[in-house]
Image (cartoon, rainbow, N blue to C red; front, side):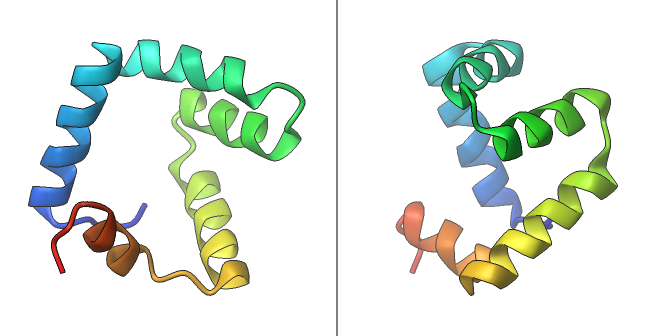
Length: 81
């Protein structure tokens, strides 16, 4: 998985805690949101199984396809630029 700076990891954990309470609650909510989206369902299944290599491949493909720099995206999201 992408290695995020510790400050971003901490902020993400705080957001999850504030909104969902636990990562399990977040996962359950995401499953409901996935609906009939096979790509998202596949990613959530990989996450549940702990298949980090599979998730890494999805992440890499998506960022490359959409020409997204994940570190810049996260820094912008958290207002760190």
